[in-house]
Length: 290
Image (cartoon, rainbow, N blue to C red):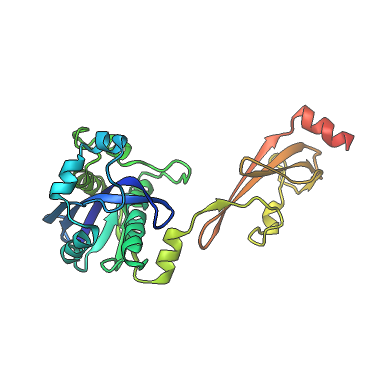
C-alpha cells in the first residue's frame, strides 16, 4: 500500500458562470510514501487560473506566489489533475482536514460537471488522526497544521508555510510522529461511493426547533446532579446561541437548576451535549411569576 499526502493552495475567485465564489486552486503539492512511510515520489505543480484574472493580495503575501509565475509556469487545472492522477495511482489519498479535498471536488465539478474525483478510492483525514492521538475531540476547535507541528516539537521554516509542497511534508511529519503508537487503519475509509461524498459535503448544523424529528425526546429529560433523581421541567424550552434551555426542579430534593442541551446534526448522527447550571434568581422569579 502507498499513501499520497496532498496539500493545495487556492485563491478566492468569483465565477460569473457559476454566480458564486470558487476556491480556485493555484498549486498542488504532494508526497508519496510506501508501506514504511518512506518517501518514494514527490509532486509539485502550479495551476494557471482560469476564473480569476489575478491573485488576491492576501494570497500573494501568504504564499509568495506571483501572477507572473502562474501564467508562465502554471498548467490548466485539468492538465494538472491528469498528471496528479498518474502520480497518485491507487494510493490512499491523505489531506490535513477536509478543506483541501472539498476545494478539489469544487474545482473538478466546476470544470467537468462531475462531483467524483477519478483518483479518489481511499481517503484519510490526517488532522482527525492526529487529534485522536492527542486526545482532542472538540469539533468547535479543530487542530491546525502549524499548531500541531508546534505541539509535538517539529522544527520547520515558517517562511515555507502556506506553500503546498512544504505543508504536505509537514502533514506527513505530524502523522509520522504518531504511527508507532496509534493505528492509522481505522482512519482510512473507502471513498469511491455516494455515502463518502454525501458525508464529506454535508454541512453540519445545530438543530433550532425543539420539535425536530432528529431530536430524541428522551434526551430532553434531566436528573438532579445532587441526588440523581428525576427532575421536572417547570418552564418552556427556549433556544439561544445553539442551546435549548429550560428550568427544572428535582422531585426528590427540590433543587432548582437550568437544563441546557444542544443537538448538532451530522450526516449520519446527532451529537448531543448536556449541561446543568444554577438557576439564576432572575430566571427563578420570572418562572414563579408565570
